[in-house]
Image 1 (cartoon, rainbow, N blue to C red):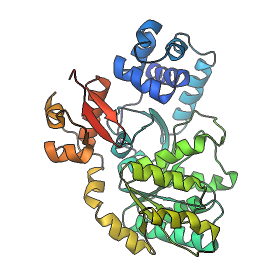
Image 2 (spheres, helix red, strand yellow; image 1 turned 45 degrees about the horizontal axis):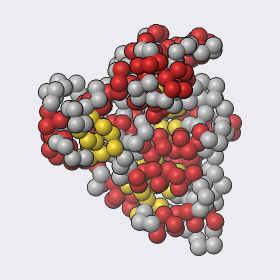
Image 3 (tube, rainbow, N blue to C red; image 1 turned 90 degrees about the horizontal axis):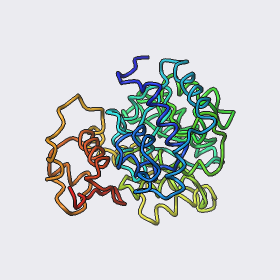
Image 4 (spheres, one colour; image 1 turned 30 degrees about the vertical axis):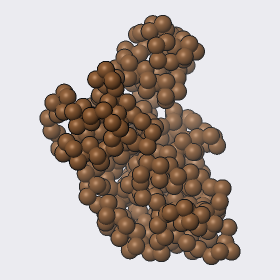
Length: 372
């Protein structure tokens, strides 16, 4: 397996990231990084200084090293060094996936095993019921195989049912698959997918934002779903009940301005009711992989822009700020204004956000701060 070139986080920097994320939540961590610039700078600051952007509890939580910190760091380092295709990626790295960076809540740290280049490939999420019909399983495999053969990487959650079938179909194509899991990356859930997980780690990519050893807790799966939606240009729901995690993924995709598609089914089948609800709400009704490809063709230019770019010089310090003006703007609007490719633009916006010169707003919008 050929691995992309990237700078490996040194032990101290990785330790600082683990300490930060163990001490506070993602929102507080993001505000602290925006103020101080990096995890070690956050830890070196006083609780009083941190209090400028987080509450007293979070500000104080980082003042002492957690008792199990050394053990967690050693475990992470051992896991990373055990195989060449293992990596810990953090927010702000050059090859951090642009689509995920554009989402409302990008993870600060990702554990990866396999082909990290798939994070920037044109991708579509395929999700659905854990208790699908036989036809639903066939549809998921067939759609995923055809789409993978046409160059679309399939993203799903390794769950039983539709997710597993989508991964299997994608592995039979050319563009492979990404499995975003709701456990630590060193665990497999369900256990029946252990062999499938090994194949994905070898031929595709396994992804988790959860600490090593994290068990399958119900609260973590909606968070996992936001990564599935965030990594994908669109989401296809094959089968889903009305109360389904797949509908969470579809909602998050729609909120991020991504395409949502659904496969219709029998009006008598409970597995079809979620898809029918999505279609009533505006999701595109699709009956074949060819129809999915027709929808994706309109996104192909944007998808190709999400491939990892060749190294280019950063834009002038104020070029993006000038293009941004003082009104909220989307990524697409900024691309039109300044002509920069999406990966370079999102990376520069992230730097401006850390510097406190740009604010990220709901709906994938950015706005210049008054002091910038």
